[in-house]
Amino acid sequence: MYIHYNEEFLKFVKKNPKEIADMDVKNYLFHLVNEKVSTSTLNTAINALKFYCGNVLKREFVCEIKRPKKDKKLPVVMNQEEVSRILSSVNNIKHKLILMLIYSAGLRVGEVVRLKVEDIDVKRKLIHIKSAKGRKDRYTILSDTAMETLGLYVNVNSPKKWLFHGKRIMLT
Image (cartoon, rainbow, N blue to C red):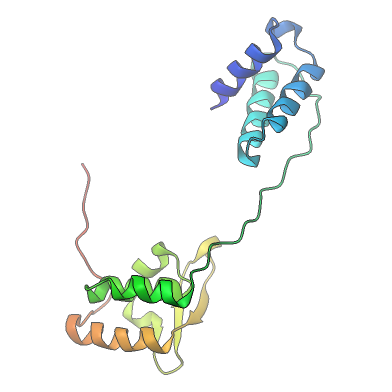
C-alpha cells in the first residue's frame, strides 16, 4: 500500500521527487479528504508519505497533519423476530448454542470457540471469558434460553475440556 500511495502521490503532483515541497504533500492529502476516503486509508497514505520523505528522500517530513479519528459506528441490532428466525432455522444443537451465546452473551466468535466447560457458571448464570479483546478477562451473562440449550447440548455431547470440540483442519 505504501508503494501504491507514493505512486499516486507522484502522479498527482507531476513533479520530480526532488522538487516536492511540503505544500504538495498537503494538497495531495486534501485531495484524498475531498475524495472522501476512509480514515484508515488516509492514515495509510500519511504513513506512506512520511516513510517516502524520511527514508527515501532523506528529508524531514515537515508537514504536520492532524490524524483523523476512526468513525464509531453502532452495530446493526436485530429485533426479536429476526433472531428467532435465525435460531429456529439451525438444526444442529452445537451451532444453535454457538449462535445463542454469540448473540445473547455478546461473545466474539474467537471467544465462543475457546470456551471451556469450566468457564460456564450455571449457578450464577455467568460465562468467564479469558483473554478477551485486549488480553483482558471478563464475565458476561448466560441467558435462561441459552442455559436450556446448553443443558441439552451437554447431555448429548458430554464435553470434557472444551465446550465445543470439533475437527481442526490443518493446512500444509
